[in-house]
Amino acid sequence: MNNNYLPSDYLPIIVQFILAAGFIGGTMIVTHLIGPSRKSKLKDDPFECGIPSVGDARTPISVKYFLIAILFVLFDVEVIFMYPWAVNFKQLGMFGFVEMLLFMALLLSGFYYIIRKGVLNWEE
Image (cartoon, rainbow, N blue to C red):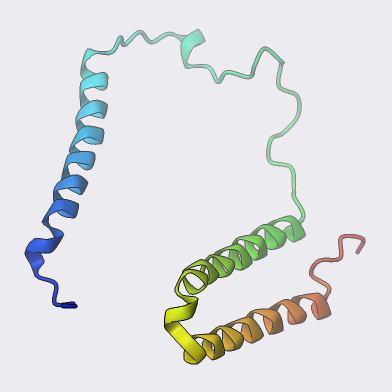
């Protein structure tokens, strides 16, 4: 099997990307040009679903909320790396298995560190 790829092999991907970007850009320009443009005070006011707004929207939110969200994204993305490994498990052999064990050890050591630091405790 020959794995020598030529730049011309990527031409369909480049053409598809250019067509998609052109369609998106063209659609945005055309809708901006032919769409109605009626400005008024009532139309430019923010829409609040019929409920009058009360109070300030900039209330303080706990940093723990953002920390949990970032940790979720971090570990979720790391788990995604396991899918290609699982698909190619037989082709990777023992080397791939050892590499995944190392990856899992690093992932679980990070998770252990987070638990030891008490990041997931909400009652504090």
